[in-house]
Amino acid sequence: MMEQHQVQDNAKSEVTEKVNNVEQKQQQTSGMKKIGFGVIGFIIGGPISYFFQHAAIREKIPFGRYIIESFKILLDPTSWKSDSMVGNVGLKIFLTCVICAAIGCYIGYSMDKKNNSKA
Image (cartoon, rainbow, N blue to C red; front, top):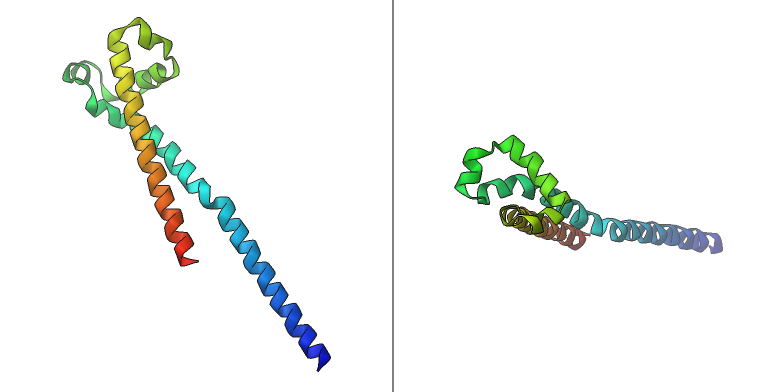
């Protein structure tokens, strides 16, 4: 009888330990979706910003070249100060990237919240 209680206690403690391990893993990965979707949103924001530029820019610069030049502008923010046109383009690129990143973070947060409510 005594052995049966020990076996039951051991089984309960093993189950409790496994549940705790699963909860710890969920807590560790919960922020990763927000970060991942935020980064993806920021990257997607670059190409989307093309559609928010002036018509003259869209007419003279093909989409492929715009993508390359937009990342050059983002990586060299000192060029924003030297030329007001580059500053205007750079600001639109940056703001679009930040907005898309915020949307991505919100999507990741919603997914984490949904997964945590199921558990």
